[in-house]
Image 1: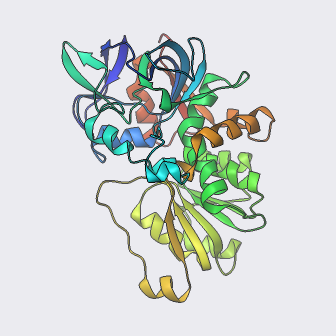
Image 2 (image 1 turned 45 degrees about the vertical axis):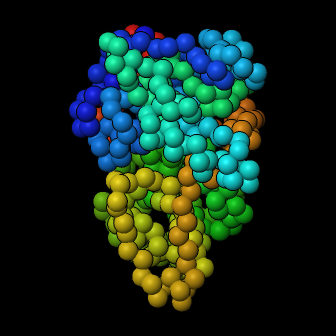
Length: 368
């Protein structure tokens, strides 16, 4: 099969043939129909985040089950599925208390570059090739644990199912799960990429008002307005804190940071009103930190919380998102940006880092 291979950090991806084993016990083989272009993959490609090499990136995807391994009970050949980069083991304390995004088994996949058992199904010329986050969907096919797939209902296109598996569940989930009730309360969203725009949709769904989006790309800000943002701030031309103060005197109740930059997190903390909360969803370089004024933290009871994977329970939340999409209440089609064949995957990441609008999608079976 063809796949995009990262051989060393900072190097372009190489599209080449790889060998893929048949699915093992409780695993499925998926023909990948669509894979989202995510900043998290870019972090691994650049080396800001580390994983075993060589590796096939791609963690946001959807496709069709082509084969099942021994012991698979929930899926059959022909099932349409969404891929999850955080499968649940179902046994650790976090799974048992309903927080599977923190599942302890994830550490096995991250550290080994393998699947849940720590081994790989990918090979190149007889040498081991690693999986990224147990998925590796920048490829024509992938083998994943059956715990890493969710059924996709009829009427949900593969592109929508793919972006739902990371960008949408992270952004919408940050509102529905990490924020919760916010009708009539102010939400400011830093970053209007795929996750930030998904957060806008979540804020609209929850009835937040005003909804303020901050970015440096005018086209992204225009997209945020089309999706329901009531105000936008161009951080390349405006003083962000002053602009938000004009929109919401006294500060905002909620700030979602979807970029992963220390300076942006500090601004998000600054614009909170007393008792407000920053929800951090963007990843940064390993070891990065940001400053929090201690007295403001204590005296104004501000909070900073992290939200991984939208603090979601994907087996419950992804079907809910698909249902909202099918009912017309979550217009995910508007999030889809440019489409790329696998051969143009490096162009996709170049566009991502230069400020492309919407979520780029790789279609592995499309010819250039």
